[in-house]
Image (cartoon, rainbow, N blue to C red; front, side, top):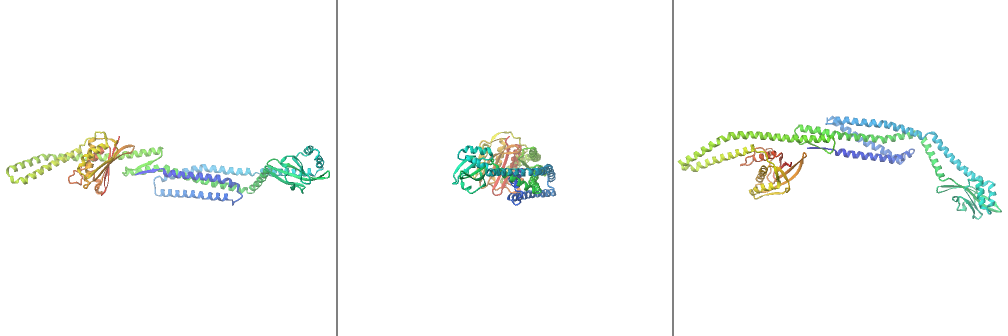
Length: 585
């Protein structure tokens, strides 16, 4: 069994980063609009901001409450790591408060100071004064044009209208330098004279035909033009005279901005208390979700820190209970991963040592049994055989009628004694199996060599070793490995009395940082019953009448001596697969 961690934390952090980016985007998108529409409580920006400001903290708060309930439940159930997780969470929340409270106080104080500075009375007086100066300046120019048009000087200057227009314009500039242009029409609307700034030229006489006095202000691009019209009688002819000024570029726009600023200042000043409150509330709704996000990040980081410790605790408990297959997986590359890898190596070494110990105990026990059995049985074998031979000889000499009874019986005794002797020899071979003499062996060539011997035992059994790599080589004792394959092939053939297939395949696997050659030997036989599975490798266990029960015990002993492992998978009616792992190094 294996434990893995890291995926949930990564996904959670990505979600929180997305929420943080979304929150920052909403703040940037709505802050300007909200601040510019504070006096309008029903504006769309304010409504959207309020909805987001309420829903987002509620969602985050709901997630935090759920996590707290889980933590309380884990503590009640005394789950591993729950108490340490609580202490870490309290620590992270304390750090968040330690950094956020001073920042909040400073920010609120800064907001108050800024508002008081913005809404200082001198600024309002300055804006109002600036607007009054602009208006006075404008009205002064209008009055100047009106006075100049009604003055007695203008008719005197107009005497040079036909004789010397240049002198006329020079006299006007000398008399009133604020006049930027003069335009004269006769009674028929024909333009007689235009001098000065061309921007003040009037294109349509009908606008001034019946008008005397100030004319409406004209805006052209960034310019504003003020004019005054008057009528004068010269040499018996009536003339329409227009004098005007071109205001400084951007005068109207600046005056409008000044008016709007004064109006905004007046509104803010009227809502000063509400403005201050709204900004503080806005700051709270911005900072509170960020604080909640920091708490959620604390939950995730705590989980990331706690999980390897909890896994180690769980793994230690399982190993103490005897489960040496327990492993912990980690994708991190830090001190905890080093600890996890060290634990996995330790468990693997314990598991391997335990298997070695069990196998060694089993071998030692059977060696003692073999030696004792050989000692007890071998002594009477020779006298029994000699006595049987003497009896047979005497009866042959004295009574021929007993030949057909005595000779087969004695012959059977001799055969059984020989069989018993063979059994003792095979058992002694098992007890004194020599250590392997390692050499480089090609897996496919060895399988082909052994299978060619057993192929003739049954014409209806087919060997298939096409799934073995041609170049796969491992270190082993050739004779002992031939004995392993011979026993497995012989058992597979006997499990398929009606014929079938034996499929041999191989691959390279990695276990505990070591490379192994894995060999599968699969038959399509009758399978092994559940109650017999635990006895398959026991010495002298057999389901065959003529079997010794030592074949698979010898196979397991040889594989073990090669620092390998053997196991099997079986299903009734489908077949059995023996799996052998032998180290490549």
